[in-house]
Image (cartoon, rainbow, N blue to C red):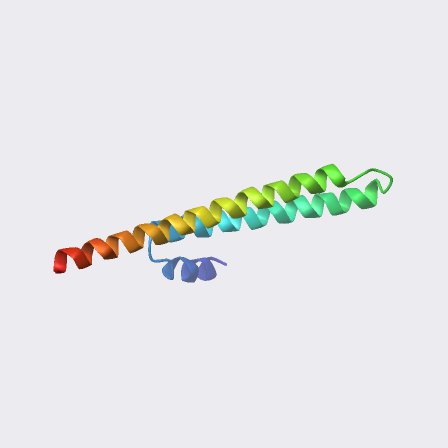
Length: 91
């Protein structure tokens, strides 16, 4: 397990890549546990309404995907600005 994690970390080139990797891993873990919990609850209590828990999980997914997209978009925009500044200096 540690060798696999070591190889993953070797392929990460910057701190922001590491942050995205950790955040994405955390998101996948939490959402998997949430969906599994709702799924198990539906078997334990089949007569209960599951619209509210499923709506909550959907809202969490929407917020986290939006945060990841915003982070990655901001990173790309910053990289483009840096490259543009380098071009302007070289000219």
